Length: 424
Image (cartoon, rainbow, N blue to C red; front, top):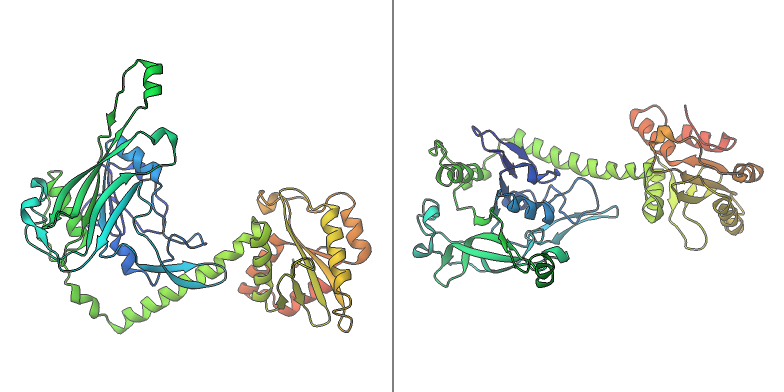
């Protein structure tokens, strides 16, 4: 049996363990354990799933969950104490905390409530789970009803079954097992053999609380022992909740550095957009790249320019373009219009034109042979404009970080280049 855990590991058990910010194919595993409470624990560190950066929480796709259940695999989802925590929402512009739904990724519409002070009704506990719900404990998240939702027509006639594992005295589920039956629509049945053959998926998805004073690894051990019959030592001493109040000074220092490094990584990762992006995202990233290199910039003015970079002797109006082809004459003329419009504004300091090109953007940078099409190069050279390709701009950031070049060398390269801006 192949086992996967996300959000925690289980020492002594052969399994694969991943963090929530790693993309994983859950279909490859017979049994999957998902610890949503780990997301809440790290809410100040890991960007939430709505963030606009690669390094963020990644939930399994809904279709993969359905395929896993259809194949007879079991998925155990351990719930947090709140469904709607405030998680980091990271974009290129800012970072803030936003309330996010930790159950929205499931292929079910889950209706739930949250209230305090309600304990387990022992008589409601399923026989297979008496080992886990062997005493009362307070749990604030209750599951009222689950429906199967899908925009896919092939799942339109599927149904979902909610089986209570444990409930409150008022009949609200604290834990439940969910199964799916794949239905057949009448038209399809008549077209095939006149019979409606509903097929029940042999796998199940479990929604479960993590009991107070239990740790994720102990719960997983208990499931493998009591539901799968594994021979496992369950007497491992669990860490008490209050242990989180006791860290060594060096541990705290390392924790703070890890948080800072993650934030810095996210900030730097946006510059990789210079290699493949187009449109507004490319324009914003180009401006941010010049700022990172130490230059004063101005943002886009609609109808006048895509941005502006100030050098010591003059300003450069930007035309920024990402395309799967070479840059054509239209964009070169657009740059010429931008420069002409800016002449009056910068008559005292002087103004020039800089075409920032991410041409043939779907190719590896090393495979891109040209970026200017036809007579466009002659048009730009005649007017003395400059061209910098975004892979070269990315390279300048890399060289700047390595200490190979500084702002002065980059400015000199822009001013002294015949057409294409490069630093070898």
